[in-house]
Amino acid sequence: MLRGILTIGGWTSASRLLGLLRETLIAAFIGVGPLADAFVMANRIPNMFRRLFGEGAFNAAFVPMFAELRAKEGQEVAARFAAEAAAVMAFWLVGITVLAEIFMPEMLAVLIPGYVADKEEFALVVTLARITFPYMPLICLTALWSGALNGLDRFAAAAAAPVVFNLVSIGCMLGLRSYVPTVAHALAWGVSVSGVFQLALLIWAVRRAGLHLYLPRLRLTQAVRGLFGRMGPGLVGAGMTQISQQIDIIIISFLPASTASVLYFAERVNQLPLGIIGVSVGTALLPTLARHILAGEPAAAKVALNRALEYALALTLPAALGLAVAGGPIIATLYQHGAFDAAATIVTSQALAAYAVGLPAFVLIKVLTPPFFAIGDTTTPLRVALVSIAINLALNLAFMQPLQHLGPALASSISSWINIAVLAVLLHRRGLMEWDARLKRAVPLMGAAGLVMTGAVWMAQQAIYQPMAGGWVTRLIGLGAVIVIGLVTYGLAGQLIGAFNVKALRPGRWR
Image 1 (cartoon, rainbow, N blue to C red):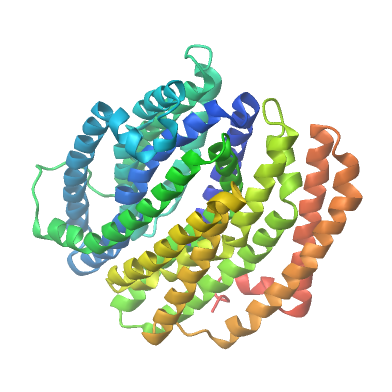
Image 2: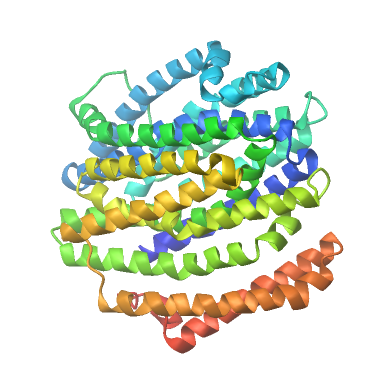
């Protein structure tokens, strides 16, 4: 599992760093404002459907079924099941895409009503959304074949796909901007074109893994019906989550101009540790837990979950504290160029701090959900998600006026903490999670090491970064020094007080 985490984490790190380069270029070219807001909203539409159909609910149902069929009936049967699922998925996703292209204005009038009054900007969002929407079926099929590879414990290609997304997006932004009306149009084309390349990469990886890849005649086999039966509760849960996020979007559409792009840039920075840690640990944990549970090894499953929690917290706590304390220098160094000014840096760093409050919770949700999926229970996470969604909605409405751009970020953070608290209690009651002595001892010590790091980062900002904040190059050097000081301080403090032991990461020692 640790090898899988490191593989996924390495590729995800490369993707996130390229993503930061992409966001830096976007900030420099269009900053925060109507053009950036239009692209952010247009990009949210296919990603909303992607999260609904292509990731959470589908992977939660597909990976355990694929692993079970492979273990009991062989790889050929499992590969045939994947191909049959792909045929059904392709059919209805293409249908949704055709309908969305035709009725995009009507759909957006419901999804982002705050933009309808500005006819010019609304028309721009419609145009950009029509360009980006074909990304949805492409990336959903990519997610299917990623799930198959994950079921084979092959994580590299699926983790590398986002790298392709960022490379293609950057290429289109730089190469097409002279041939399309705005940089936002070039970005929109980059989204859809990247979907083609990502799917091609996964098809190549699946063939290389020895799976016979083909698209069979469309039919609902017993296995496919079982898949969609398992997906049902997850789809409802994902649907409710998307409804909650859509409520956020509606609220954002009525907030002052530039709010959408401010939250977008803040969230992208927050996504760096979230993607590297949360996605890596959660993706590697699910097949590991499924194997132990199928083999009747509950003790081994608990050990795997404890180590996943330990790895996640050891990396997430300092990341959250660092983003909260050093948000201003981070945003200024990454984004404050060209159209992105100092005022945008202030509000974006404030939003980043609000997101950072919930960063450990965002990561732990990805760790505490797979145990339910591994035993075929997709209903319980749904029920917990419904509670979290209701709280998120109430907080969004309460924060809308007094907190403005901070409201959606802070509401998401608070509701996520409540989500993991409920998941942890339910897992403990079912006997699926029991903190071992190593984890109980490590967590408070990690927190102490994080506080030491926070003090060091704050002092380094005052002594090193601030005197060097005049130009971009000196800002970059200053920020690098602050980050290195924070990492070294956390590592040394954690090692000295026994929060973690680097030697334990060696093969055979993680237990």
